Image (tube, rainbow, N blue to C red; front, side, top):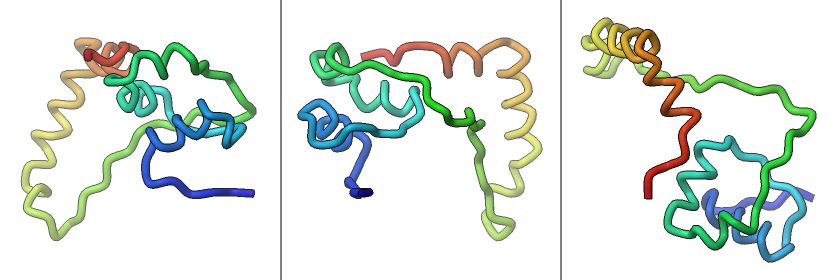
Length: 96
């Protein structure tokens, strides 16, 4: 059975209480959700599953005024990638 929850933290709490057995979430999002709940973080563990790791994507509408900044946006991401900033962001524990 699949049950919906309003947010990641809600699912993490349900997992902690034994109300659900499995919850799929990417690690950075889960870690960020538990920043203010270190006791919850200590009780939960991650497990690798038979799931493919997927990259993060950002979508922009052609109708959005942001589209005029697309080149600067792409340059900033490339710069962050070259400096190792993106790797540090996605591998680091969140700062409380």
